[in-house]
Length: 392
Image (tube, rainbow, N blue to C red):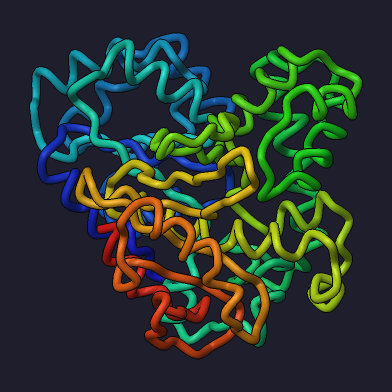
């Protein structure tokens, strides 16, 4: 098993809350993590028909089995009625880490928690593996294009399944299982086309009208479906920062898939070598770095502190890290392997406006060297620690 960085935060929350919930996209490693951390707790999968029927028909009797030992309740959102009864059990026993809850339908799980278990549950958000976790296990990629094609879902690293086969099955599971249960998407074919159109916009500012038109849906439907993807942790939207320095700013968010391999598959990219010359390479690389930052934050139990900045003249900073509640750390992201001074052009423009210093300015690029330059830090994609300290 690949050791997950979220384990430390999970243990910490289990010492303080009577219940802890691990949320995240399907196949991100939630079940493996909680069973590794809490091996003595009974494991209960609520997708099992007989188990689910018992929990639905007699929730009080179902939970009574685990009042003394506690339990791991996997896919607990499948039985919403349990949450009201679970509230009483947690209040009665008030034992730290008594129940561990997991679920891949984050929208249903978080809705149930907010309604019945607010203040009683610590939350860990788990995305697929990070580069740091793979490097620690001695599983680096030959080239970053391999990461962009393969992605980071654990099953791709502990089995012989091919990425194309994995993602094809993953998409069908998400479409036919999760969305069918939610009944929020009536036309699955249209939604699958919408997913593909989103993949081609990975790393770009979202134009809802253009996206809706290309998919043959309404503007409001496009917004609703993007919200569904975001709540499912399939995508993340990075908002523009409000600081304008008397400039008119772009107000729409940028769209990133939380796993570049899924985006590459949806875009029809057949292998890692093809990515080298593909028009989507820059956006995929940008999503790789942005989500690496997010994984670091989430694994430490924190929300996103990432933004971007773009004015009406096209000047842009790919990522602004809001550090310490006041400092804004600019990070430019370039997929090229050979750095040049142009990589720091937008950093210089931003620093002139903001008064920021080169010591707190970064360019992350597709090469291996890391060095301090007069305009800022040059950081290799696999050596992100100088930037990560601002995400702590």
